[in-house]
Image (cartoon, rainbow, N blue to C red; front, side, top):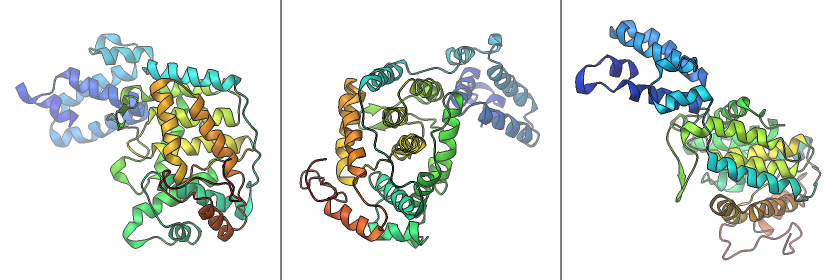
Length: 360
């Protein structure tokens, strides 16, 4: 596409500035590796298209972007901004600072993990994956989901959905630590995302978004600002006390940036739980019945810069999750049913403790 646009004449040709702007978007969203891949593909394709002249111009733009100090070769505002590093969503960065400042001073409980190994960890990973997928629309009966994870029974007419359940489960078991802060943070998310949604090529697994995404009227971080915002935001995480406080921050960071076309909610909870696992704390499950309240609390932070409700919601679920016995899966599923965790209507049901009592 790029070669053909550069090679066309007259009104059929995209301006050089448009080609450069698209490549800047790719660079900011996906990094130098993807830009190098485009360059290599162009070199391979050019002879067959008789596009050697277009190739030369395209390579000059890519090389200028990769060598950001060569400002004379860049013409757009976005291109020139590359020389100053990846751009950052300043409004989001301020919101992350607000949350971080609150978490540095707010005392949070330390709830030790009791599911660090054996079947209890397997069972926990299954329940974590079940709810994390269910609340995002991948809905199975819990017994059917159990067969998928514990017995590797793929549902014939729902192959992709089955692999979604398996993808989150495998990461819940294997992801012992969040991705490294800085430039490597997005790269770590890309690897997790690719594993989680590998059976869904339509959502570009492992590739950051190239189009803006929304939840209702909330517009998430623009694609061009994803890499820089995550790099800065992940570094800020290291200023927050490790454990539950930092886990809360990671959950909001990934959710608020929404770096991929799909799977962002699941990914945000996996990063949150990876921090808890790293510090020996109990991982957290957001059950179906509580998910609407969790989303409302996140929205209050997004729209009103008030972190209190969001932090309280996760702390509440940390305490709730830790009450269950994960050693026996039959009894665990029954306890979850008794607690109303599997229900969908907060108007009709109230989330109960593992012993059937109200409140957590």
